Amino acid sequence: MRAVPRSGWHVATVADAHRETPNASRLELDVDGWPGNAAGQHLDVRLTAPDGYTATRSYSIASSGSSSRVVLAVDKLPDGEVSPFLVDEVRAGDMLEVHGPLGAFFVWAPAAETGDMRPVQLIAGGSGVVPLFAMARAHAAADDTTPFRLLYSVRTPDDVYFADELDDLAEASAPLRLDLVYTRRTPDGWPTAPGRITREALEAAVVPAAERPRVYVCGSTGFVELVADWLVGLGHDPRSIRTERYGGT
Image (cartoon, rainbow, N blue to C red; front, side, top):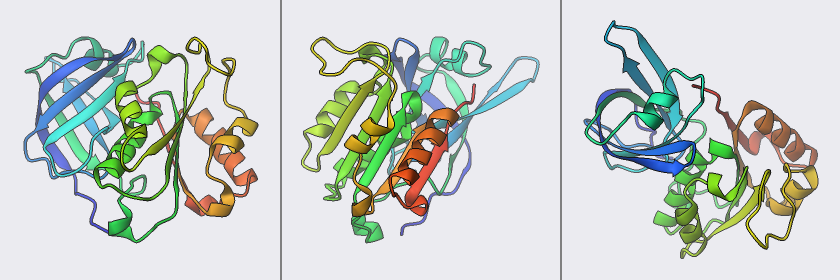
């Protein structure tokens, strides 16, 4: 397995900032001295006020590879110290401090590097799709033949992160099977009513336990714990289930 890039503090210039969903922004950063990152890693963003007060929060990285261009997708939390500034105030040309890349457990690499040909099941709740999108995009870029699926639970069609890119990945030469569950509102003509994901829906959508998939689950603490418990109950090996929870502000 390849070495996971080591971390450090870097100066990042915002190359682009635009809305990803009504409540989230996509930030593209040019990071001086960035060593590259594995799909699934995260970084810290540090803001410093004029009086010297600092606030630091962690954000998953939506990109991977050796490029110094780093992509984030930040969900705004109303009472947050950092996310409202990143979503509402940051503009192209602004400078940020970032620390990373971080994390060596919740990562994916192509089978050509790892020798692991088992299927991969990605399961996301809301903004938890960000590191899983990085994995799916890395899978397509490597033209990896490992079966890849993404089960994505999201409130409404407007809240889907990377909607166009996910559609493209579903049509790529190394295709991603995409299953969407809408909890509040569905698109016109959607075959099922909106509602939270159920154990039955999970069982129907994920790679069967008999195929020994590697599973990555990312979302809120409640979502991740519920899904992980269901997966184990369905016969999935707990050692093959990797989880990441969000909740920073």
